[in-house]
Image (cartoon, rainbow, N blue to C red; front, side):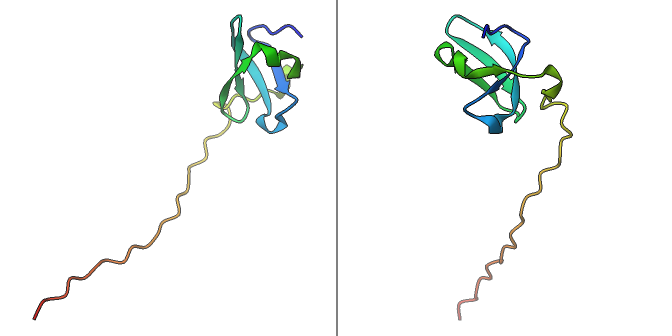
Amino acid sequence: MIIKRGIVVSHSGAIEWGVGKVMEVSACKATIQFSDGITRKIASSHYPILQPADAASFVSPADIAALPKVRATVKRVKKVKEAAA
């Protein structure tokens, strides 16, 4: 498979990443933005692992509705200083 900027691919070794769009290609690596929101640099030696994917299946992380992050709040107990007698 020829890797070119703008094509949509999937990584057969990491299905959980989803499909990715090739953002940049150099002689030794390709920069790919995957649907899981992480941009990864794939070495050219790993190009055979990349498979063509349907362009319609790529969902840009910016297109995914941003859900507010909910943080677990821990109630902190205030330390009360005892008066020395």
